[in-house]
Image 1 (tube, rainbow, N blue to C red):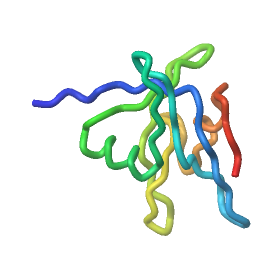
Image 2 (tube, one colour; image 1 turned 30 degrees about the vertical axis):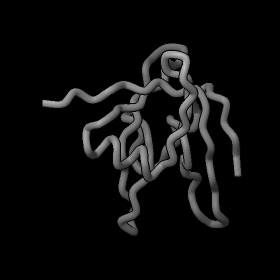
Image 3 (spheres, one colour; image 1 turned 180 degrees about the vertical axis):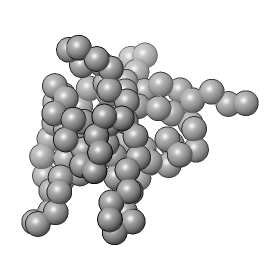
Length: 99
C-alpha cells in the first residue's frame, strides 16, 4: 500500500477566460528546501492516483485540495469546502498570480 505524500503549497496561478469561472492553473511551494510547481492536470492526476495530497495552512484551518467536475465534465481544482466553484481555495492567503 502506497501512502500519499503531502505537499504544502504557498503560491499558485489562476486563469480566467472570458465568460468562464476562474480556475487554479498551478500550485507551488517549497518542500524540504526544494521549490516545486505542479500544473493543474498534474495535480489532478496525482490526487486521483493517490500519489500526493495538496494542502494550505490558512489562518484558522488547513485547506485540502480536491478534484471537482464542472457541468461540461471538465475536471478542476477546488478545496474540500467548495461546492461548484473554487471560491474558498482561491480566497486563501497565498501569493496568487492571475493570468
